Image (cartoon, rainbow, N blue to C red; front, side, top):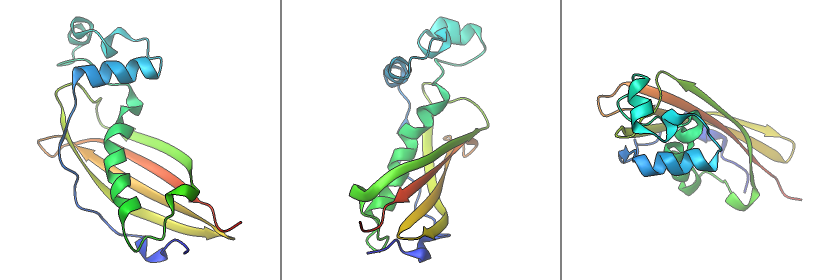
Length: 148
């Protein structure tokens, strides 16, 4: 089944709030080899003007994953996850994510393109804090391989 072109423009319900924990930030920082002390040390983060430890910029994918799960579970999407390759990832941040943030994300499918037997689905996840202020937008392009 090909990717449904009517996905373009579809907005999904906001995800349940995600509470950013210190240990999750530290684990992620270690996994991506972040070396800045503000990513693991509360005192260093506070000395730099932050309320708590700061997540590396790519930490937003942890929250975005919940929105992409909504897209992949959509019954009429026509996206077979076994045929998906991650094509691109970008972030536009208003401020860093810090431990203690309660984040909610809303996904919109911004583009569905067909290239021969393959499709490219671009999805934007707007991530906001508990007060509704923008924190980061994570943009992913998924390549859905067609039949061999």
